[in-house]
Image (cartoon, rainbow over all chains, first blue to last red):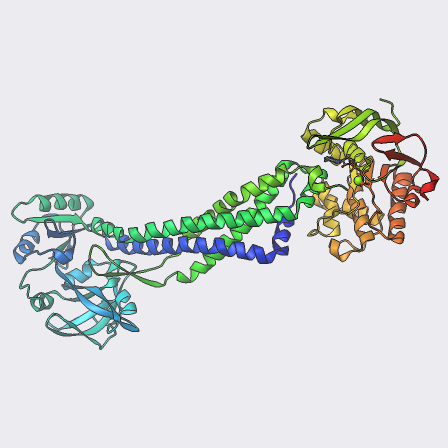
Length: 388
Length: 234
Ligand SMILES: Nc1ncnc2c1ncn2[C@@H]1O[C@H](COP(=O)(O)OP(=O)(O)OP(=O)(O)O)[C@@H](O)[C@H]1O
Ligand SMILES: [Mg+2]
């Protein structure tokens, strides 16, 4: 009982200029939304994958980030012997770490400097990060001013290739390796020997935090409570996954702004689609009358023009997705509001976001197409036919 | 209602009100048109010819009087029922062809069959047959703009007859055509009437076209004249 879809497809093709312009407007709207979506998705990935559910991060009470926390050697010696801690090679999986920042210029634009996190840690600390693997060069030698840089830092920051030197603390440190930490936020860090970093920073035996791996989920919960409640320590333990989840707040302003811009653009695109469809219907009023005369119902006419609007907007949706596809895997960077350093991440165009983009375009088609389609369906056959 | 009568009008009136003015388009028309008739309607511009066709096709409703078409009282039907009834019983041919520009000849003719339960191969077959009847079996995949006016009108006739309706209404079908094309169209209509038993009502200004019809009547200011087409028109 329906008017064939080929009728709509050909009409869109016949007026390809307007079709393309309208679709392009929708495409840009979808691209903005998807661009933001893939950024947020990339960040979410980085932060979610950084937190191991069995890990606790221990900082001084009231510290919101490792950068501003101080945890002394005495506390470390106490915690090391707590129950429920996992072991590796006969040693407890506990890592006393020092976190600070170093200023590095952008590759190709040295003026654009940013804070990059430098983490001093032990061999155990490296082993505790399951996803970490050396890409190039070697790990630092304990006791030497050597650095291993995360692949995110290596990709965007200057002076981070093997053999290059970075001034940090009290001297020049040589880059000896590049590591990958899967898609986690550790890619945005530089790793060095904890003892040397501690003394270079003038912290003595003091450090920023302690990373602890519990044996089981239940141990993780118990340890978190026990360490936080111990008044003598004055420390606060937090699940590592929670610590990184909080850093998602970094993406919120961009998320809000992006969605706001996309919504404004979407309203514009809706009106553009509406305008295009009104024009199409005005040009085809005789045709519509003939369809009605042949016996097609008002509903068929309404459906046919809705389909035409949907095809138009879907074309825009597909174009929009194609526009953002090259972003996939691209290295992004953002100032992290929690660590006060740069977090690098990879844009991720997932099927989920493609689905969101297409759905968004369809919604624009429905909203923009409805009024024109209704007008077409309501048109008086005789009047549209004119005197014949 | 008598069998043998395709269309029966009794005291049929149609008035339009346009900005306080009342226009009487059809004034008290009583007329029977037999099944298998080739009926020609003539008259000056504004005399109500198109209005009469619109009423018969159920595109418009009479102000008063009764109108039976193929035994159905179409004044009583809802819009939906009318649309369905029309697609099954009426073929309509316009002066300006009114083909869908983006569809080929074949697709244009197939279009009314979308409203039937026929499968696509059957639809295409019937559309092809209809195009062969009007002598355009070799123009199936041409777009309207690739056809001459006469050919376009023949496609339009094929579209009107593809559903095998009992009645074909043609509103000045040769109005836009040269003499040769007009003759082709008129002989096709004659064939449909004579060999396929279609009841045809044709509106025309052209006395030569009127000669193809079996009966001609004259409308003037909405009134049906008793006389045949006056010969002064020639
Ligand atoms: N929808 C309408 N609204 C108002 N008046 C109308 C409408 N349709 C027709 N009329 C009027 O009814 C009268 C008859 O019109 P109709 O179109 O039937 O004439 P016609 O004989 O077909 O003329 P033509 O030869 O010019 O096509 C005219 O006066 C016309 O203005
Ligand atoms: Mg007319």
